[in-house]
Amino acid sequence: MKKEVVLGIDLGGTYTKLGLVTKTGCILNNSRFDTNARMPFQDFLKKLESEVNDLKSNLGPEQQLIRIGIGAPNANPQSGNMENPPNFKWGRSVPLAKSVEKIFDLPVVLTNDANAAALGEMEYGLGKGMKNFVVLTLGTGLGGGIINNGELLTGEHGMAAELGHVNVDSNPNARQCNCGLKGCLETYVSVTGIRRTIFELIAEMTDDSPLRSISFDEMTGEIISDAALEGDTIALRAFEQTAEALGIQLADTAAHLDPEAFILLGGLSKAGDILLKPTIDAMERKLFNAYKGRIKVLISKTPSENAILGPAALAWNVEH
Amino acid sequence: MKKEVVLGIDLGGTYTKLGLVTKTGCILNNSRFDTNARMPFQDFLKKLESEVNDLKSNLGPEQQLIRIGIGAPNANPQSGNMENPPNFKWGRSVPLAKSVEKIFDLPVVLTNDANAAALGEMEYGLGKGMKNFVVLTLGTGLGGGIINNGELLTGEHGMAAELGHVNVDSNPNARQCNCGLKGCLETYVSVTGIRRTIFELIAEMTDDSPLRSISFDEMTGEIISDAALEGDTIALRAFEQTAEALGIQLADTAAHLDPEAFILLGGLSKAGDILLKPTIDAMERKLFNAYKGRIKVLISKTPSENAILGPAALAWNVEH
Image 1 (cartoon, each protein chain N blue to C red):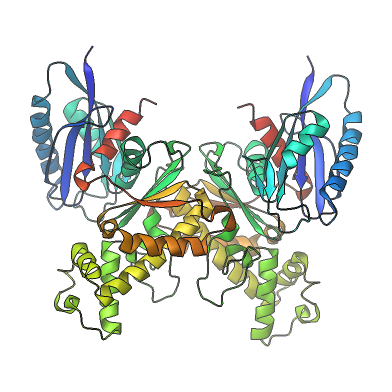
Image 2 (cartoon, chains in turn cyan, red; image 1 turned 120 degrees about the vertical axis):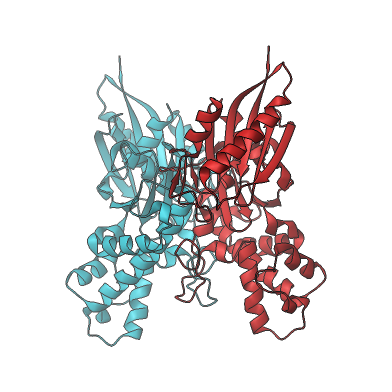
């Protein structure tokens, strides 16, 4: 009998990662290429085709590729399209699942990147053995993925868990979000969000800081984390404020879903305890009695180069 | 073959309603009695026993009572207990399901009142045919019940959907909630909440109003609704502010769950369009693009005397 494998594709605004993955989460071969989100969608498909064919050529005769799972920004699992992806020049509705299906003549399943990450954590990560948890990806934006009773919660229109766009500041002068709203969680709690906080604090505080010599465009999440680890007061204050906003939101999300755990992923989560401890403090302070002391907040152990495990879990998950 | 019926019990802080209900939602007999939440739990059980026996004596020889469903405040479906019910003098953990089971020697299923209401709407109300919706009971407090993919969402510890206790005001001077937190949704959006708003507005505004001659203790939801319907400016302003807070929260809850609809129940919802229209306006203004124009907000058509349909639906639901 042939040994079945799936192809996981993590389509990001900068890189597309792909790899062949077994049922138990072994990555057989993988690669990545520049997504080139500002070039036509057809160019992306051509590049993807050649990369996948390279991977497939390494499959042994006893191995068989049976399905493709894709995680992509703004992807709708019901339509199979990316809907209004703001950082892509691929049109308002990108028929991603159908296009990939046509090229490889294999079943394709699609979901948004944070939902895929939630499935990846359930199958191969910290969510193993858990039935109710929530993943938050803290990268350029903030994505959410909800596992309820062992299954991905997708909602009526396939678009559940857009946790980056809950409102955390209803003041008229709240931060403008890319989505058109103001005061969205991701304008505070994401790599972009903490960068905005840093610049607010540079204006507000007078403390000396190496961060004052770095422009907004050059200010990465790593620079901010490193400054905080070295005791920079502005960076530390920024993490405090970010954790406060995150913790308060986790308490509200707990009041909806009563999860066993929150699992944090993405650039901002790499700061570790500097983010985690004040987040837990703020959450516990705001948690309704029924949940106090019962909900874990964890940082994922999945390295970012293994982001294909999420889409792979999606592909395997179809069999359930 | 015997025709099966279930017993639905809606245990409230003031009244307990009970009734025999068929699979299709016909109420065969029903009654109600004073809960007397400040008297011992054993007194309540004795009264319940005699009331149930009265109802059962009206069953025909071909009818058979097979199961009991109970909706009660702060009830945990996993433990079968009411946990820390603040308005009851029955102790910290009330073994409700076990006690009722012992008396009648029948299977008992228990959930909190708002969860039961959600099941009732799904089986016999506006949620019929829907797979994803959220019920909010706007009474003395605010309760939530979430239907996801045709099933009640209960969470890891059985305590999901405590939507009355999401934070809507993080200011240190936000309203104190009975639960110990500050700024909880139910301190604004409930009969008690709008009453607090009325008194704030009486202090803030100078408009003449019949509401100025009514004490806090005497100010019911009906008095506030009636005043609004007659054009009272203070009452109308209170509904505007209440609807604004509710609409903003519905947008956040939508970003978690992507439901087909919100269904509002309870005293405050009886105000009808005075509450509904500004709630929808506020929600739409704050909704993330993916949901705009796609989520209904409805007022339940279940009369409050039929509240036993929720617990009855719970009892029938066990068979799925």
